[in-house]
Amino acid sequence: MPIPLQNGHEKDAFTRKRTPARRLRAAVRKARELAIVGRSLASTKHPVMAQIVPMRRCNLSCTYCNEYDDFSKPVPLEEMIRRVDHLGRLGTSIITISGGEPLLHPELDEVIRWIRKTGALAGMITNGYLLMPDRIQRLNKAGLDHMQISIDNVQPDEVSKKSLKVLDKKLQMLAEHANFHVNINSVVGGGIKNPNDALVIGRRALELGFTSTIGIIHDGDGQLKPLQDEERRVYFEMRSWKKRNYSRFNKFQEAIANGEPNDWRCRAGSRYLYICENGLVHYCSQQRGFPGVPLAEYTKADLKREFLTEKTCAPHCTISCVHQVSYIDHWRAPQTSSTSPGATQGLVNIST
Ligand code: SF4
Ligand code: SF4
Image 1 (cartoon, rainbow, N blue to C red):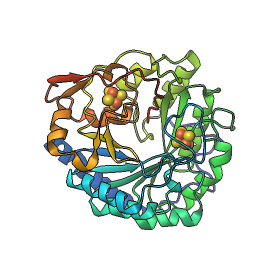
Image 2: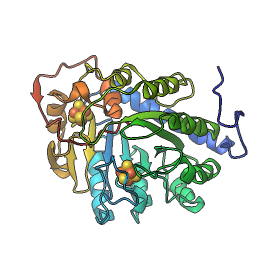
Image 3: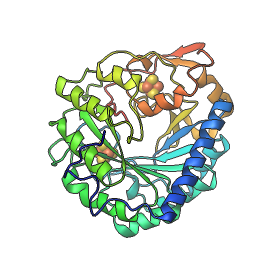
């Protein structure tokens, strides 16, 4: 069934053109992704994905977010290279740069180049505000593979300025210039006023030739709350677009939408690593401080220990990227020890 797009047409003047060069690049990227899946199935001894923060500062201040400040300096390039190299030595398959706002880092392109030198896929999560045609071209040249932009609402308000009204021009620039894969993530919950905004944003993403996903934001007390009826309706409608969506909703996200616990084995600290601006390894953005050891000292023995460690915050976890990474190993190696990394610290959970 065709997806009803915002203006009633499948495409508009800005729809991304699938040039031969872009098709080739997409095919090569797909082949690399398939190789990552094969390697991850063959061995549990390396991280599948690491998220790395080159800068905690952000140019926005979304009220639900606890992952930014307005003062910190960029991590020096030499230190970023050391960290990326170490992730490479651990055999990391995908390295995603996040923040804060990564585009504020003055040497971001070099970081991306270094990620590609390790053989990993290079990704980035950005609010998109600083994108311009020449900036996008530089990201192309650096070898960026994936970009995700989160858009929270159609009109900016006191909760979030990540709005379609503000960012649509940036999306048009990406459609014209980006050679990398672009996913637009919209959200429900967490004080976002109009759940239907997610549908408008998702349709616009598809209209421009991008992929579209939806996440759930939880309130600032960090409690897992079921979605309201209207939010759930929007959530499941976007789920029904799965044919063209990049990241399909699964039972895991359905349970989150319904406020139910999930039964799964979190492999954070092993298959997924979160590296903060201070170079420490954490389970994820929600559980900063655990295990909280320097990346430079993180070894294969740490990966093995954490692979086998149950995290008691798992049943109500909303971090779907960790779930997706962990799902590869769902069928093997029951976890033999357990840790409770402070699941109710009041951190904000963003499902991405
Ligand atoms: S959600 Fe993103 S854009 Fe908003 S304040 Fe946090 S890091 Fe910045
Ligand atoms: S919050 Fe989720 S991803 Fe983070 S350690 Fe707990 S279960 Fe794992």
